[in-house]
Structure formats: structure tokens, C-alpha cells
Length: 95
Image (cartoon, rainbow, N blue to C red; front, top):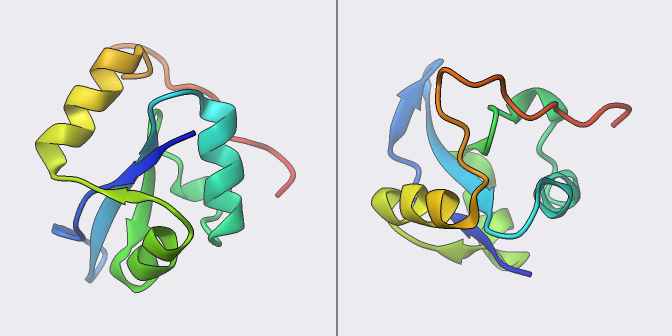
């Protein structure tokens, strides 16, 4: 079980954001994201958008720090990458 996170370098909504991914399954990703306080609305098809304020929490919980290119490479290699033209994996419900 490995989760990965890139540095918070993506601007949006007045904050900087990271991407949190799993290279194993969406179930693993959703469970980890919930454990570190990411709401379901933060799920963006194949990753969670994590605000800079939660970055250290994710790393302390076990997410491995990698670069943004490595995030894309890992998602693609795992088969979990969702190209923009494909419908996203459904977000978890009831959290």
C-alpha cells in the first residue's frame, strides 16, 4: 500500500494544492484521503486535490513525497490514470 503526494505548487482558489494518488486502487486512495481529512469533493477523477495546509498531515500519515511528473508516471503505470475525455471514477459517498 503506497500513496504518493506531490509538492503544493498548483494554485487555485487563493491556495496552493498538491495531488494525492494511489498506485494500487481507488478504495485505498479514498480510505487514506478520509483518514487525513480530505472531503469527497476534493476527489478529481483519479486523485485528490490536497491544500498546502494538509500536505504535512498526508506525509506524516505515510504518503510518499514525489515530483509532479512522477505522479503522472505512477498513475499511468498503475492503470488508474483517467484521461480528460473519459468519465472520472466516482467519488466516495457518505463521508
